[in-house]
Amino acid sequence: MSAHANLERRRQAIYGWLLLSPAAVLLTIFAFYPSIATLWSSLFSRGTRRNPAEFIGSGNYADLFADPTFWLVVKNNLFYAGVTIPASIFIALAMALWANSKISARGFVRTAYFTPTVLPMIAAANLWLFFYTPGLGVLDQIGSIFGLPSVNWLGQPETALWAIIIVTIWKEAGFFMIFYLAALQTIPEDLKEAADIEGTSRWTYTRRIVLPLLMPTTLFIAVNAMINSVKLIDHLFILTKGGPSDASKLILYYIWEMAFAFFDAPHAAAMTILVIAVLGLVAAVQFFYLDKRTHYQ
Amino acid sequence: MKSLTKFMDSFGAILLAIIWIAPLLFAFWAATHSTSDAVNLNLFSPWTLENFRVAWGGAPWLKYFMNTFMLVTVILIGQFVLTTLAGFAFAQLQFPGKDYVFILVLMQLFILPEVLIVENYAMVSRLGLFDTILGVGMPYMASAFGIFLMRQAFKGVPIELHEAARIEGCGLLGILWRVYVPLAKPTYLAYALVSVSTHWNNFLWPLIVTNSPDTRPLTVGLSIFGAPENGVDISVISAATMMSVAPLLIAFLIFQRQFVQAFLRAGIK
Image (cartoon, rainbow over the protein chains, first blue to last red):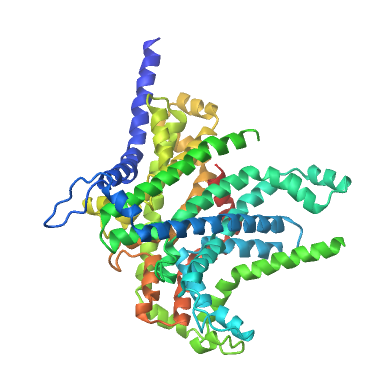
């Protein structure tokens, strides 16, 4: 190897690390170190003035598993994910099929579907507050036309989580629609023509040709919807604050409450580690499964 | 038969569209009418801007607007600088350890910043950045997503241009600045739109690290303004909500195509 090539290689290595270092420093400070620190602090008891924090191993985790509120919150979050993921995927697909077909007022329709995406979750919650408020809200007004009694949608355990779920679906469906829309536009026209010549019904065409071709997009959206079901909790602060009696409390909200309302950082840390573990599992599934599925494209 | 299905399609699509923007329309209606008219859906009641006046007087909105504006600007500048440098290193330079570091960066994609609030709060306090706009923005600057996006954009630049610039005597940073950055303009635009709308709307993290009207962004200000303890009525809350979503909403309606393209580009890559 010539001296010149050697010099060039050293130069690239130095430049490479130099260019990388600002991002590496910030990633270390705000992602890697905090992850490890969270794991570390989840193994210690909460220190007070008289009792300094001490190592208790899996004690915080054991506390969580013995805490009925924790299980309720997990159950709520699973239900939240179980409803919002399929519902937003289904609605996004319907929106995309409509927004892609030759209907009148297509521009208006597309804009209307996508608009919630650019609103802050806090603002979305305020808008929906006007729907849900008992007595004054739009839902109650409509109900009273049909002689239905006033319902406190946000104030009773049976409906509070549903009210939260509907806002989430409303917020994310239009966002997912654009990915379907882009995928639909890559399906060649001749497939539709061939199906028409064969006399295939529209339903069969959609089910046998369009849906399979959209499969990679669906998986991509499903992963995003899953991440959202952990992340989208801002509206809880406005609409229910996790109540009534924890009926609409979700995990990330509980972590926030544990850390910043109850000042119990160790238990919040333990919960954070559990969430990271689940997200890591999702990432692994996506990496090994979704990547395989999209390769044949 | 064909025209019937077409009619049903249009009908369904438009019905869903109306349902979808109804919350926004109702809020607009409530914001421009007196509370009792809004609540009774009194269609022929007079329009008023009184709610906006009351809402505007109820909180330091101008300050909040400025804070949000500062916040998204600081984040965007930080992200552009950091992700350009790192993305370039990953895309075009060969150095030992590169692949391992890249995997570490990708891992950050799945450790959501939202989940690490407790330790990040401790870190920001330790750095003396609690209740500063820099403190709100800093955890988002070295975005793994942005690094990945810029790497992809830079990988698409033909190597011939790189070589040509080098023969002309351009240094490595000069090549980055004169060849790669101009060619990646569409990616920068897409990234900017996604970043600005994400951080304009972000709530949980700013709620935790801000503690005064001097740093609080719009979303946090809005949540405090609308809190039930303050006892503001629904029309005034609607007016405040309309006010705080207006800039982004208007920008979106004008640059709709660019917004949608930006989200697509950012999502698919």
